[in-house]
Length: 309
Ligand SMILES: [Zn+2]
Image (cartoon, rainbow, N blue to C red; front, side, top):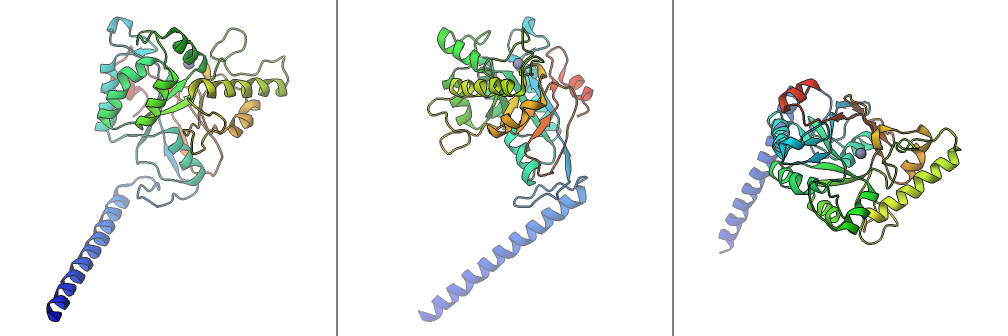
């Protein structure tokens, strides 16, 4: 009996040793295969840090409305079929969709990004983003950032007419989207989505920096309460979803407001400058990104070739 127990123990030990050995071997092989093919110093292995100063190319796409009716297609409206073609293109070409939070973690801390990251963003907070994008994001295992205008959310809750053609997201929709894991919610201001008077979130030439910052901060406060159910005191706390993206309406911004917004927890600033990005692990506490408007008037291949991806 005693001998059998020892034999059993030995067999168990052998099996465990074999398991550890094969795991180490497999990891070594994967790491070698990666280092042979990687063109950039960026590492994708878990728990591995990126060397400070490393850069990665990050295309950011800007979508708006998604509608089935092809006669509605335009600069800011795309069909769900075209959106699916884009996602299929990303998948086929080994692109991985990343969130603003992931982008910032790379820039600030060197947290590795997938080898070919792409950021998919939707502006304005259309209800049709939930109707048509959610099933596609789930199907392709991708995530996107939806930049919501707070005043539109208030309007949607007041009107209570959930028609994907013209309605906007409510706080309940937003909460469900954040819960799903396929959506990150960004700030597209509460009520600065206009070019009549102030140009977006840009400083007026006649106002002082203090007055301007006051406008921005009041707007952010209202944006929070209009886009979040429950407590809105502290973004990023355990009870609050992580929201670090600030998308400037129409791309207008002023440097004077930057630091105040950063102190509110925003670290990823989206503009409308149509260009790519080369983001660097620099330790910097914010990142500003250019975006390509994804017009619904061009085919997937033509658009992707046009932006060089
Ligand atoms: Zn907008």
